[in-house]
Amino acid sequence: MTTEHYPNLVVGGGEAGKYLAWTLAKLGQKTVVIERAMIGGSCPNIACLPSKNIIYSAKAVSLAGRAAEFGISTGPVKVDMAGVFARKRKMVEALIQMNFGRYQASGAELVMGEACFTAPKTVQVALNAGGTRLIRGDRVFLNVGTHASIPDVPGLAEAKPMTHIEALNLERLPGHLVILGGGYVGLEFAQALRRFGSRVTIVQRGNQLLGREDADVAEALWQLMEDEGIEVLSKTDVLKVAGRSGGNVQLELRPETGTKTIEATDILAATGRTPNTRRLELDKAGVELDARGYIRVNEKLQTTAPEVWAMGECAGSPQFTHVAFDDFRVVRDNLLGGTRSTTGRIIPFCLFTDPELARVGMNESEAKAKNVPYRLARMPVAGVLRTYTVSEPRGFMKALIADNDLILGFTAFGVEASELMAAVQTAMLGAMPYTVLRDAIFTHPTMSEGLGALFTNVAPRAKVASDR
Image 1: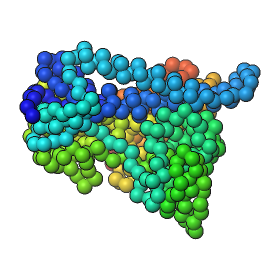
Image 2: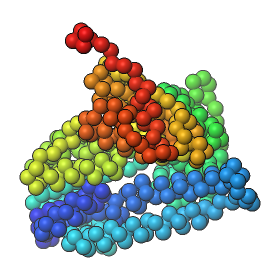
Image 3: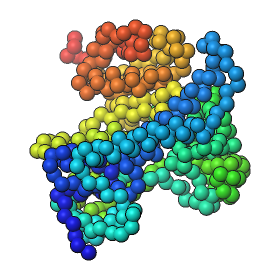
Image 4: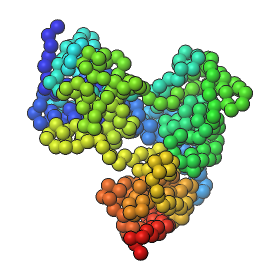
């Protein structure tokens, strides 16, 4: 088999991979992308955007159910899951075409197939359309992502549980959905499917939802789930599973005391992610993995093999599309003679429940664990007049302030929390003291106006000898 040669070989066409390919190809560098299944990567196909599309449909159901509260008279609300799916599919198809158009416009070659390494910088590609190709790159970029983990529980794999992929393609409504895991995926799907009409139970091994968040945040999410009619079982292990998801399943559980069995129609596994590195045979490329199967990289995302980089989730980066995009910028800038690294990045995140949870920087748990002193400002979002106009008073916001008046972290649980966070993140990026936001003039009535009130609540800086 003849080996084809390219200056740039990108394995995996996710967020970082596709943008790097488009950029290099536009610079006149011959570039090929090997993509196993999804044009544009997981975000527009089976992850971020489709899930938020489904969540917004569930929001519409919720608002319709509250119609009388807004002075609107309606008849009974009925959910058509086939229609929900059709709306999502229409969006996904448009996004696929948009991404395909970017490939065509850039000149990057897209090869649909599965790659595995046969030698350094060389892959054999099993083409989806049949046949194989052998491709070598002067430079190789790995962007193969992760997939949903299935816990090693007796009978679970045989029960064929849903992952987020199958859940996003439902054209039917589960009668009783059991969600394994109380993290991002679990909570977003729990609320959405409950609003569509499913009975939902969350089984969480830890003692709180969102194990890395502060206790008050976890408690607020727990209360939200309960108010939505979702059962939450914490400190509970799954011992074994029988039956088949999509029909009838039985789960034997072990809470803090004793055991119990629950019956359901469906299971959604939302317990974490596993890197897609196992079948790549990266040892033949000289690329080392860590103990969890992620690709070892340095702060410039270089692997242990010369002229080979890894980006996104497979490189152990935080599992967000916006981080993968920044990974692309790190690699791009260094290739073009600049200096950029992953060190010290301020990474925001948002849980798209209704209302949202958004955070950037440290929370109180992290600050205490690292012995970082802070002053706390906290207020309910009901103290912001915007919440009166939209009838969304649930939640709170809080900020951690350092002795030098810089913002260490910000958390918001409430309506438009992600937009509030963006304003605070901008201040953090500019190393601005919190007083800039405290004294700013924000439009009335907006949620951002609440930042002035929040930062007015910061306790005075403790005086030290040099201040006296």
